[in-house]
Amino acid sequence: MGPTRPASLVVAALVAAALAWLLISAFYADIPALPWLPAVTLAGLAVLEAYAAITTRARIERRPGREPVEPLTVARYAVLAKASSLVGAIFAGFWAGLTGWLAVERTRAASDDLPAAVAGLVASLALIAAALWLERSCRVPERDDDEQDDEGRR
Image 1 (cartoon, rainbow, N blue to C red):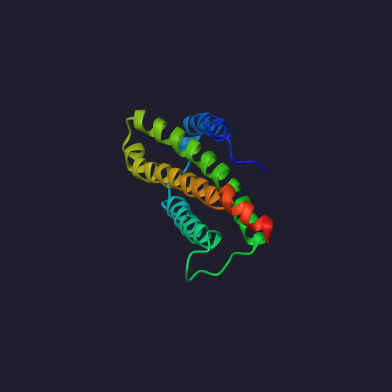
Image 2: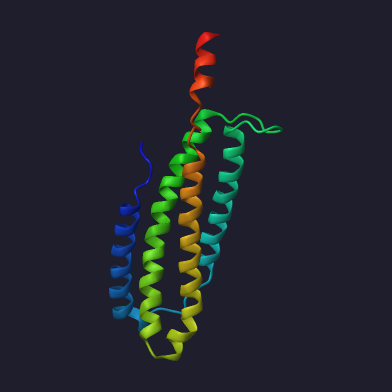
């Protein structure tokens, strides 16, 4: 499993944005006001993954006062991070398409829905950032050649 490629995230976001724009332009009159719960949920996931990134990196580096981390836990976090970054990109694309459409629409309903759409976009971007940070935190730090030589002699 390799690191997440930014191009994959960009493509997913662009496809989701185009789809959101098409759907919202066709069905906006039929949907209720946008809820705030998706934005809050995405922001909560971003906070949890950022916390996991901080604690995982500290445990991998075996900082004082931290217990070593199980390798299977790190693998699970890495999979979670890869999935979350893709989900975040899809949601960011969706919210970006929705935000763009609402910004050009000149109705009261659209202006009322715009803050929830912007919050969803910001929360999605935060989830992408936290997921990429968690993925990076799961990497095993490279050791110096001197340390590797010392361990090889023991």
